[in-house]
Amino acid sequence: MSEVVLTILNEIAKGNLVKASDYSSFGLAPEDYWETVETLQKNGLIKGVEVVRRGRENQIIHTDMEKARLTLRGLECLNLAKNKLTNT
Image (cartoon, rainbow, N blue to C red; front, side, top):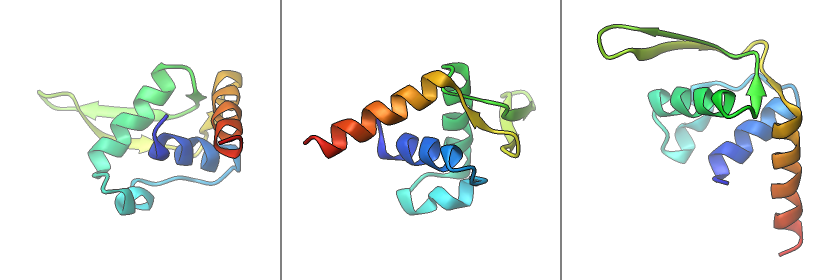
């Protein structure tokens, strides 16, 4: 699991509101951040994120992370990743 994904999951688990600008230090453009968040939700790791797409290319123009929460699967993945990091 990538460092970006782990960081997003960890921040949501802590109840922090995560924003695209928080991930510029990873070299992640806002559009890539939004796509990552949407993928996390589609894969059942998080829930409660509103994704707004528009235009011919169906680009994400906005995400609302206010109600973002980890699912049980997301929490399990986060804990597994943390355990792997501490046991290496």
